[in-house]
Image (spheres, one colour):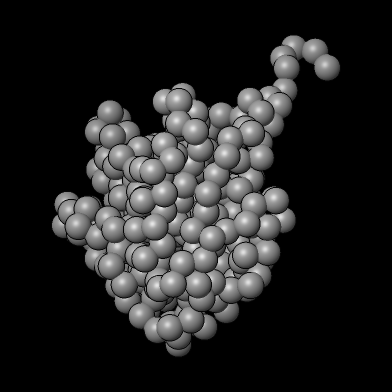
Length: 287
């Protein structure tokens, strides 16, 4: 090889990992008058948008001298944390709700990490993870003050493309808020108008990764919606099945929570140029 050295895994940076995740036009089953695009965040290390926040927070934890990183998760962030723990040789402690699917636990275990199960829901796991981090001088990941930084890069990447609408799943709200912050920064620098930010949530039981009763960053989500003239919408199982069928017909094997981003478009709420953030692959639907 000549000209430059390739990054080794141990030297991966946020920029070298995520710069320019692909954007694909959707052409099948889309209402007339709408130009719809999907940003494929599953083109990442573990196939999830969570790689952005984990790579950012873990590198920060290392630089600040913490002994390790503790997180609470319902799935994707746990897998990402276990992977980066191996890459950088940095200890991690993962807490997951006791009802977490066996397949999700196996994904974490495949990296040689065993998650600690906590009685209760995601919020209960957050409490235990926070306590562990404080006791053992571990960085508390996922909900730290640095949590938006990795996702702000998404907003930077899309700002110059001048979308009219950006639709993002809301679980804890961090991806939504971070992307909005990044778009606001870059649109301000470029003198461009902001797109409407639309969040989608799952209202029925069954999609654990997005069924968080009290999203941690919902207040800031509401600010983003108010500033951009957007909305936060609740989806049903019927909405999911319709959106999934349309997403798959366009060749995108998206996880269920990401399929929901098509809901507002299929309902005729998004005219003009719309971006759907595809947060992960359907290979993780049962994992």
